[in-house]
Length: 165
Image (cartoon, rainbow, N blue to C red; front, side, top):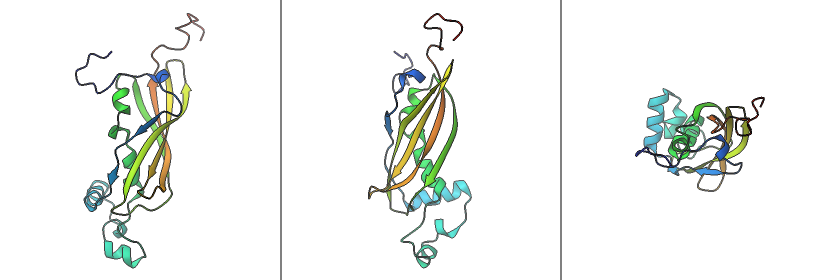
């Protein structure tokens, strides 16, 4: 049991995770304020992300979210995962994503991270998470992978007493 009074949950290590384990993130409606905040943070100045009349003139129902604006909704920090691995996290090592359908202002997105693969090493392991983003119509708008390097609780070989492992 953790003794940290600020801990939100018990600490977990690489070997504590299972393929198929899911980590839902809070849903979020993509408001025009979020579009403006993303434009400010990213510096992206294409009118498809801030000019609704431009979007309508080009056949879109409203402002189009930048792919990175959709991707950022899958940040693990919005959920419990990073709180679970505060003691074991070595790093967020990579991510990839595919943008499958447009996201427009007013869409509500539901995001989930799911353990897709566990790759053990001697002292660490890689937890590969499938990231998925679904809109309010149940359409998959983005999917991808995030990979995290976590420490093992007990390095391979130490538990069995075999120093060659």
